[in-house]
Length: 118
Image 1 (spheres, rainbow, N blue to C red):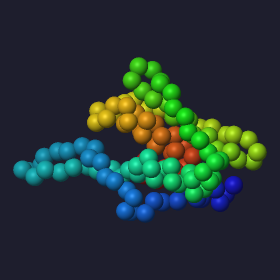
Image 2 (cartoon, helix red, strand yellow):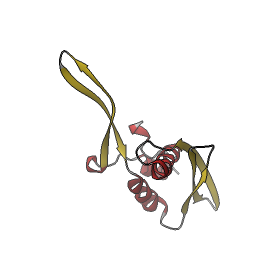
Image 3 (cartoon, rainbow, N blue to C red):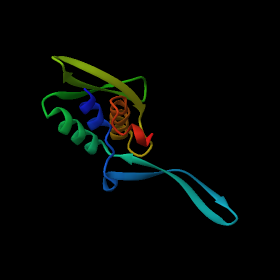
Image 4 (cartoon, one colour):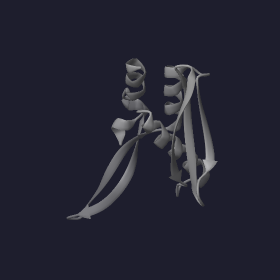
């Protein structure tokens, strides 16, 4: 179990990280931005494939409230399915795709994937 957690929690290579502007501000005539790293959904899917294999994990989505999506990530471990889920509102950029992607990222954090980025 320790090896699984270590594998899930492993840092992603820097080249797999993206950067998102969280806030911008001006000070003394200069502009600044706060940025946060993120990993995209495909890298998370690859991580689950690497750790559990392609047939020992699954993901499902459902509408959650008016404008949100809930993602459930289940893994087959010790002869049973274990699930963890989280949700996210639709994004401003791409409402449906963003809701799916963000809820997947949030559910993956519950498994330890990308938790160090939060």
